[in-house]
Image (cartoon, rainbow, N blue to C red):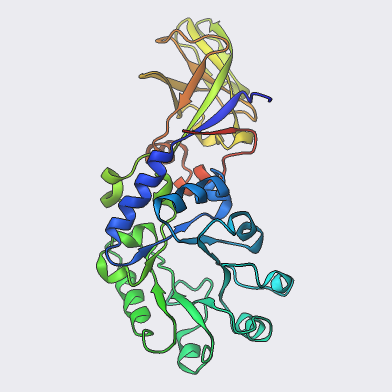
Length: 344
């Protein structure tokens, strides 16, 4: 088997521990998990298998192609983007159902769904996907077999936003307007807003993977993924010389530098240029110069790091987000296909 020169070190304990903590915060509501975007970049099937073993029974994906990856593992799978004309042939996959978002999708499901259960998204103010509450009141969903009626919070990561309470109230007002078995509103940050937002089912995503959408969750979550990459060369850059494209970093003294097999083609973004950090054990190794497509340079003056050694990139997602200017979501979902994904 080919050994990749960079890898993702993935923690089952952190993944399942994060989910269990979010499930406990969800109170009496069931707790699902978003595994869209290939399990937020970590591998959807591997993530789903571990979460199901921990007790998760509701998974959320964006498309039917994503649903096929995690179907049949022992959890219900909801396809958030609904059912297009091109998806009709996939209807009938066991334990997979669409989240209907438009009157056209509702009509398509009535014609092709053969009375099967569906989910429905209602737009309570985000103005993204979802049917209008007035259409629900007018009978759009009458007669449908609805498992979960859901909506999505626009500002859950801003706990003081008045929009959260408005959306929660608008959603709660729909409780008796459909025959839905369950209602679901809260994402990761929404869980932290309190019991009023939990309804019957919560849908965490980022926090399951160790991202921290709001400070209230910071102490209970652990990073799930650590990037590790191999050193290709150690060199000494003389004082006054530069490293990398556009010569953005100049050596203040003779400096030991490691060139590492990692770059923006792997999802280690250019925003980390002169701002990122790796570690050799507990020793911090600053990223110096521009991140290029396949390589980064590290100041290893304080570490005995040489060719063939491995370094770990900073796994703290909020800190990496602040350094790079990329959201925690982008840092996870942008992780590339060249990594070996190693679960422990």
